[in-house]
Image: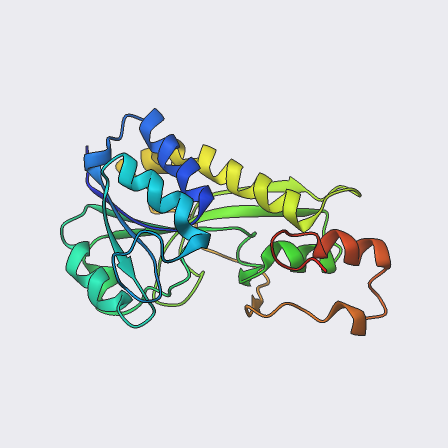
Length: 230
């Protein structure tokens, strides 16, 4: 089995690693870079990431904390030791010559190229789309522009919330992991991104200043525990 470097965080990363296990990938095949803004190996520091930290310690998965300041150096240290780098719920931008040292893929919880950047689910709802979705793609130097490995759509129903859609998108993305790994194994180059695109920055929109947003839509978008709710 190829060695995998996984850049991730949070409870959804637990589900991803369980999917790896179901595919025959073993704990010793994985190395994890995960979030801790201090960069210190203190297991109880970041409570938002605590369940994941306990999970990878339980399975004795090799891991290292990264912060915004340390990420580039630590990534460079690990990347040549691994055959595949997977970015999943990763808050850091991967850039520079390091991309030439291994195969890099990313999971984007939005439909590319139309929804690049952040808060794709929220903006899909605000733009009155029929669908949200997710995309597995190769990583290039420019954010969210690499060739597409796998993409799918999730219907935005009248009762859907940003919270429920996000869970559907991530769950489906994790379920697609086996297919994505098989495509990479077979040297699939992916599909070039084409069509309209827009980059959305990681700033939640001021919904109250937009008269075109009705109360029901605002409520469905803002229901996103533990954030966005009033």
